[in-house]
Length: 444
Image (tube, rainbow, N blue to C red; front, side, top):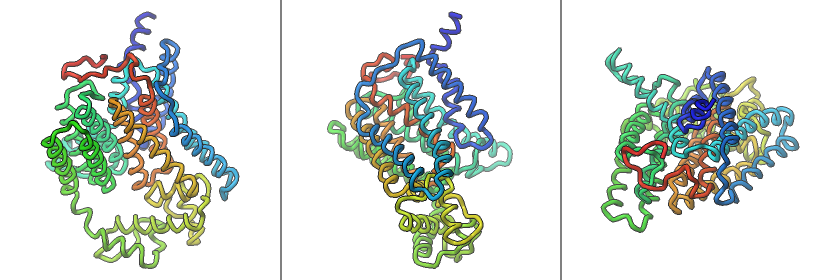
């Protein structure tokens, strides 16, 4: 029994369930495994809570907590009183938003009782980096078997599902790099060169996936991280120039690799916003278009236009529903079935929950990023992680259709944990706020 307690209390036990709980979110045919690791995580967190006191918060969650519960209350009221189909909206809200609350509560709780915050951060990062390894592993397998790269492929899922994980891993690594440069402190228990190598591998994986939204988000994350570093009053000029050049080179690498996918951007958006809307564009992906247009850009732009026009028609929202866009286009175009998303989770969210819901969501994201920045400037690396991860998710949510499902709820675990770490007492014993050597023990 003593051995069991020793093993269960060891920080490495977080690696037994947390990486796979994070890394399997949204992956097809893994529902049973996700449930298993969720139950393991809840049981482990409860056991830790019973065996050691929770770390008290160092500061109140403040405005972001108020905004989160205000958003939850609005979704409930809007679904019950304003939605076209209240029963459907309430059922969908209980399912998707309820899962989000469970995942955020688990992330928040495990952060407060985890024996080591460094192990917790490593476990959360490992779940995202699993897909970097999966993408690069697929390339290695392809090189060995057919002698060429398998672009836009991964061992675990297709490129559209894999890209959000690789950019999440990049956000973690950029936060670690920023903390090292600003404060000489780190998120991870390894040396700076290791972080640099992992970042290069992540950029390589994202470049091979060639997801346009991933390329945009990569550029945004690198740009924001670089700009934040340039504000440091003690960073010398050569550091500033080096950071700027390095950021531009990284962005250029990602864009150049996928340059062919960006052709026809301007023409596609112009046609989508000024020509009549083809009904086929909201039914499937086989709408006929002119040869000079980029099919992907055109479809995204047409669907965004339809979604925005839907918001103008229904500013109070149609009611919480991951398939709200499909419901709207079937009514508007009198068709039996439409595609499920406008390709923008933010547009879908606004169409479902109204302009008030979207405003509360954006205010919540802004308040969390503000919390992250203030925590980071105060000398705590997890603040950079919170800010960049929320920025990443907001950008991903805007560019991809992720209103509902496990991809939507899965991010709650990460945000909940990092949010909790950002408001914990600075001197809690599981964290070392000193520069980390390459040979530092992971348990320090």
